[in-house]
Image (cartoon, rainbow, N blue to C red; front, side, top):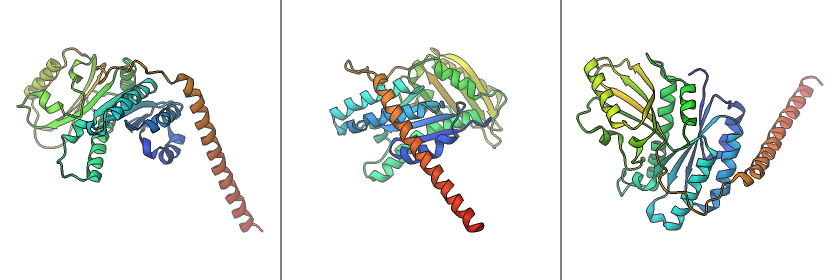
Length: 297
């Protein structure tokens, strides 16, 4: 993967994980930030954390989950505001409909099991990008291809992987899910990566390409990648990266950008991290001095 690293940060685990990852991040890396919208008390912290990550120069992709309908109108309105703050700061945003996630589980699923499952759906998005840049193939898609692609358009990002040995049903049914954007086929640009196993023949390969291009006829194909999966059978693993889709909800009229707040938040976090790092360095130095004195009285 050309030493490119992909980091994943969650809003509620930021304080512990960011300290661990930040010293290793560089401008060639990707950082995914996961946030569940709806809590008004978390808006400033959301802005805070995003600007802090942005300062590390890694490509920042937000993963935003909208709340459930039963949580109320006010919470949903707050989430829409938070979504636009995330979109403003991040290089790109991928969103999930929380209500659609509910459609994927049984009503007797425990809250703990449900939350773990919802997180796994979001993790699949991160895995899809990692697979795209880490698996070598006959036609490679590299990190610079993806970074250039993301910067081409400021609309939301659709990133999804499907895997099957049978495509006898409509392709839209295989790609669609109630928690995903429903307008992904209207995107402006697309990167397509196709993996195939040993027994896939040229006719099957041709047909799947034709069907994909027909479905995404509005999008310009920026890059096509393909790679061999050394397993028996006739199976495809297809990853779609689409940009330029529409936002899920209109931007609120009262929405105001965070640029004036950003410098204040950024400075505050930089000072906190600086003091923390200096404190740890001082403790380490003191421990080393003490150890040396014990060894050399």
